[in-house]
Length: 189
Image (cartoon, rainbow, N blue to C red):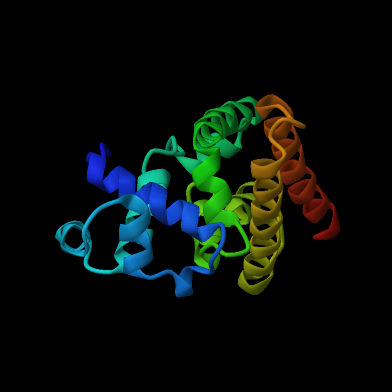
């Protein structure tokens, strides 16, 4: 998605404001003043502040490399690792946006949306392809636990990316998911 210069100005202004103000307190007037555009110009591009936030999030999320067939992907550790490298490399190019959206003032729903672009429903795969004897509630709970921890790790990395290479993070996440599914496999028998 290519943004117009006006959209880019509005995105940047909003992302700067989100570092200082919770999303629900940011007003159109603040964004337009910071972006150096008129209120009318804002409404030519967006219906509301919520629409602007949605556009910023969509712009980031839509360009994340897609996960191919999940069942095929999860059967091969090297494929998982390579896919994570691609996704993390892209996110590293967008660290200022990622930091703002995942900040304390950011959109709490964004982490859920971001997670959908990683490896969703890992436990569904493990349940059916690795013989886990989990009921649907257990699968849901373990998925939520995995997803929450992955997003916390990504949030930490967004602020400490110089501490950990993309390759180290991809290796950790790959090993982490495998260790969780392996431990569940052992505990399900």
